[in-house]
Image 1 (cartoon, one colour):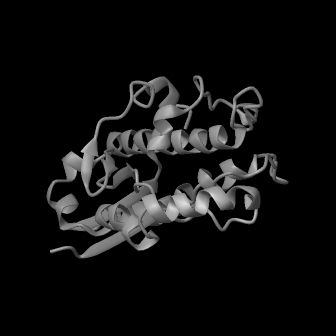
Image 2 (cartoon, rainbow, N blue to C red):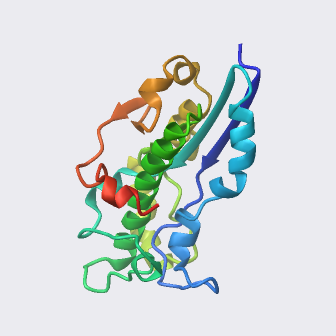
Image 3 (cartoon, one colour):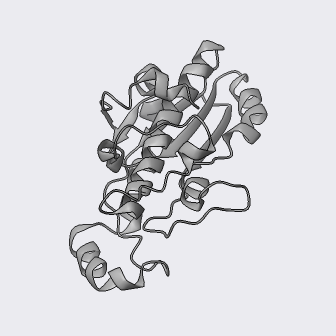
Length: 208
Protein backbone atom coordinates (compact mmCIF):
# COMPACT_ATOMS: atom_id res chain seq x y z
CA UNK A 1 0.00 0.00 0.00
CA UNK A 2 1.33 3.43 -0.93
CA UNK A 3 1.15 5.69 2.13
CA UNK A 4 3.00 8.75 0.83
CA UNK A 5 3.05 9.95 -2.74
CA UNK A 6 4.49 12.92 -4.62
CA UNK A 7 4.59 13.21 -8.38
CA UNK A 8 6.11 16.15 -10.25
CA UNK A 9 5.83 16.38 -14.04
CA UNK A 10 7.97 18.87 -15.99
CA UNK A 11 5.93 19.46 -19.12
CA UNK A 12 6.40 23.14 -20.06
CA UNK A 13 7.53 23.67 -23.62
CA UNK A 14 7.75 26.17 -26.44
CA UNK A 15 8.75 25.30 -29.99
CA UNK A 16 9.76 27.45 -33.00
CA UNK A 17 10.57 30.59 -31.06
CA UNK A 18 12.66 33.58 -32.05
CA UNK A 19 15.96 33.90 -30.22
CA UNK A 20 15.26 35.88 -27.04
CA UNK A 21 17.41 36.18 -23.92
CA UNK A 22 15.49 36.73 -20.66
CA UNK A 23 16.48 39.28 -17.97
CA UNK A 24 18.10 36.32 -16.17
CA UNK A 25 20.60 36.04 -19.01
CA UNK A 26 19.28 32.69 -20.31
CA UNK A 27 17.63 32.27 -23.69
CA UNK A 28 13.87 31.96 -23.37
CA UNK A 29 13.44 28.48 -24.85
CA UNK A 30 16.01 27.07 -22.40
CA UNK A 31 14.31 28.84 -19.50
CA UNK A 32 10.88 27.41 -20.40
CA UNK A 33 11.79 23.97 -21.75
CA UNK A 34 14.59 23.08 -19.37
CA UNK A 35 15.08 25.25 -16.27
CA UNK A 36 12.96 23.30 -13.80
CA UNK A 37 11.61 23.47 -10.24
CA UNK A 38 12.97 20.16 -8.96
CA UNK A 39 15.81 21.70 -6.98
CA UNK A 40 13.49 24.09 -5.13
CA UNK A 41 11.16 21.16 -4.35
CA UNK A 42 13.97 18.75 -3.44
CA UNK A 43 13.55 18.99 0.34
CA UNK A 44 9.84 18.08 0.12
CA UNK A 45 10.57 15.29 -2.35
CA UNK A 46 13.26 13.85 -0.07
CA UNK A 47 11.03 14.05 2.98
CA UNK A 48 8.19 12.27 1.20
CA UNK A 49 10.52 9.60 -0.22
CA UNK A 50 11.77 8.86 3.31
CA UNK A 51 8.27 7.87 4.42
CA UNK A 52 7.50 4.12 4.59
CA UNK A 53 5.98 2.72 1.38
CA UNK A 54 6.33 6.06 -0.41
CA UNK A 55 6.16 6.59 -4.15
CA UNK A 56 7.93 9.73 -5.33
CA UNK A 57 8.47 10.29 -9.05
CA UNK A 58 9.99 13.03 -11.15
CA UNK A 59 8.80 12.92 -14.77
CA UNK A 60 10.64 15.07 -17.30
CA UNK A 61 9.06 15.44 -20.72
CA UNK A 62 11.73 15.32 -23.41
CA UNK A 63 11.27 14.32 -27.06
CA UNK A 64 12.81 12.04 -29.63
CA UNK A 65 14.09 15.15 -31.38
CA UNK A 66 16.89 14.98 -28.82
CA UNK A 67 18.26 12.18 -31.02
CA UNK A 68 18.97 14.64 -33.84
CA UNK A 69 20.50 17.44 -31.78
CA UNK A 70 22.97 19.52 -33.83
CA UNK A 71 26.67 18.89 -33.27
CA UNK A 72 27.84 18.02 -29.76
CA UNK A 73 26.11 20.44 -27.37
CA UNK A 74 27.85 21.48 -24.18
CA UNK A 75 26.21 22.77 -21.02
CA UNK A 76 29.15 24.14 -19.05
CA UNK A 77 28.03 27.76 -18.76
CA UNK A 78 25.52 30.37 -19.92
CA UNK A 79 27.23 30.77 -23.28
CA UNK A 80 26.62 27.08 -23.97
CA UNK A 81 22.98 27.35 -22.92
CA UNK A 82 22.54 30.42 -25.08
CA UNK A 83 23.83 28.84 -28.30
CA UNK A 84 21.91 30.44 -31.16
CA UNK A 85 22.71 27.87 -33.90
CA UNK A 86 23.01 30.56 -36.54
CA UNK A 87 24.93 28.26 -38.88
CA UNK A 88 22.28 25.54 -39.23
CA UNK A 89 19.36 25.46 -41.66
CA UNK A 90 16.63 25.82 -39.02
CA UNK A 91 18.09 27.55 -35.94
CA UNK A 92 14.79 27.65 -34.00
CA UNK A 93 14.31 23.90 -34.41
CA UNK A 94 17.95 23.23 -33.47
CA UNK A 95 17.48 25.20 -30.25
CA UNK A 96 14.36 23.19 -29.47
CA UNK A 97 16.23 19.90 -30.01
CA UNK A 98 18.99 21.12 -27.72
CA UNK A 99 16.58 21.83 -24.87
CA UNK A 100 15.04 18.37 -25.15
CA UNK A 101 18.50 16.80 -25.21
CA UNK A 102 19.30 18.77 -22.05
CA UNK A 103 16.15 17.39 -20.41
CA UNK A 104 17.23 13.82 -21.13
CA UNK A 105 20.75 14.37 -19.79
CA UNK A 106 19.39 16.07 -16.68
CA UNK A 107 17.00 13.22 -15.90
CA UNK A 108 19.80 10.65 -16.10
CA UNK A 109 22.14 12.69 -13.93
CA UNK A 110 19.45 13.47 -11.37
CA UNK A 111 18.61 9.79 -11.02
CA UNK A 112 22.27 8.88 -10.59
CA UNK A 113 22.77 11.48 -7.85
CA UNK A 114 19.62 10.49 -6.01
CA UNK A 115 20.45 6.78 -6.19
CA UNK A 116 23.96 7.49 -4.87
CA UNK A 117 22.44 9.03 -1.73
CA UNK A 118 20.14 6.05 -1.19
CA UNK A 119 17.03 7.98 -2.27
CA UNK A 120 13.99 5.98 -3.39
CA UNK A 121 12.87 8.67 -5.83
CA UNK A 122 12.26 7.49 -9.40
CA UNK A 123 13.25 9.85 -12.22
CA UNK A 124 12.08 9.24 -15.78
CA UNK A 125 12.34 11.19 -19.02
CA UNK A 126 10.06 10.47 -21.94
CA UNK A 127 8.99 11.07 -25.50
CA UNK A 128 5.26 11.90 -25.58
CA UNK A 129 4.99 11.11 -29.27
CA UNK A 130 4.07 13.61 -31.96
CA UNK A 131 1.29 15.72 -30.48
CA UNK A 132 -0.93 18.37 -32.07
CA UNK A 133 -0.06 21.27 -29.75
CA UNK A 134 2.19 23.89 -31.30
CA UNK A 135 0.55 25.37 -34.40
CA UNK A 136 -1.40 28.11 -32.57
CA UNK A 137 1.67 29.75 -31.03
CA UNK A 138 1.75 33.47 -31.90
CA UNK A 139 5.46 33.26 -32.65
CA UNK A 140 4.95 31.06 -35.73
CA UNK A 141 2.04 32.63 -37.68
CA UNK A 142 3.82 32.24 -41.02
CA UNK A 143 4.19 28.49 -40.53
CA UNK A 144 0.58 27.83 -39.55
CA UNK A 145 -0.76 27.24 -43.07
CA UNK A 146 1.76 24.38 -43.35
CA UNK A 147 1.79 23.09 -39.78
CA UNK A 148 -1.92 23.09 -39.07
CA UNK A 149 -3.05 20.50 -41.67
CA UNK A 150 0.03 18.36 -41.04
CA UNK A 151 -0.58 18.38 -37.30
CA UNK A 152 -4.24 17.46 -37.66
CA UNK A 153 -3.54 14.68 -40.14
CA UNK A 154 -0.49 13.07 -38.57
CA UNK A 155 -0.45 13.82 -34.85
CA UNK A 156 -2.87 12.86 -32.06
CA UNK A 157 -4.84 15.24 -29.89
CA UNK A 158 -3.07 16.45 -26.70
CA UNK A 159 -5.27 14.11 -24.62
CA UNK A 160 -3.66 11.10 -26.29
CA UNK A 161 -0.29 12.80 -26.25
CA UNK A 162 -0.47 12.82 -22.46
CA UNK A 163 -0.77 9.03 -22.17
CA UNK A 164 2.95 8.40 -21.76
CA UNK A 165 3.32 11.13 -19.15
CA UNK A 166 0.33 9.76 -17.25
CA UNK A 167 1.82 6.27 -17.36
CA UNK A 168 5.11 7.54 -15.92
CA UNK A 169 3.32 9.56 -13.25
CA UNK A 170 0.65 7.11 -12.15
CA UNK A 171 1.16 3.56 -13.41
CA UNK A 172 1.30 0.83 -10.79
CA UNK A 173 3.80 -0.91 -13.07
CA UNK A 174 6.37 1.74 -12.21
CA UNK A 175 5.87 1.16 -8.50
CA UNK A 176 6.11 -2.61 -8.90
CA UNK A 177 9.21 -2.55 -11.13
CA UNK A 178 11.00 0.49 -9.80
CA UNK A 179 14.51 -0.63 -10.78
CA UNK A 180 13.39 -1.08 -14.39
CA UNK A 181 12.12 2.48 -14.60
CA UNK A 182 14.73 4.35 -12.58
CA UNK A 183 16.47 6.73 -14.97
CA UNK A 184 14.55 5.25 -17.90
CA UNK A 185 13.61 7.00 -21.12
CA UNK A 186 10.09 6.01 -22.13
CA UNK A 187 8.40 5.91 -25.52
CA UNK A 188 4.60 5.65 -25.82
CA UNK A 189 3.23 4.05 -23.91
CA UNK A 190 5.45 2.99 -21.03
CA UNK A 191 8.11 1.35 -23.22
CA UNK A 192 11.69 1.67 -21.95
CA UNK A 193 13.89 2.83 -24.83
CA UNK A 194 17.68 2.91 -25.13
CA UNK A 195 19.19 6.38 -25.27
CA UNK A 196 21.66 7.44 -27.95
CA UNK A 197 25.36 7.08 -27.24
CA UNK A 198 25.65 10.85 -26.78
CA UNK A 199 22.71 10.97 -24.35
CA UNK A 200 24.41 8.22 -22.32
CA UNK A 201 27.63 10.25 -22.06
CA UNK A 202 28.24 10.67 -18.33
CA UNK A 203 30.54 13.61 -18.98
CA UNK A 204 27.68 15.52 -20.60
CA UNK A 205 25.20 14.38 -17.96
CA UNK A 206 27.43 15.67 -15.16
CA UNK A 207 27.11 19.20 -16.52
CA UNK A 208 23.79 19.16 -14.69
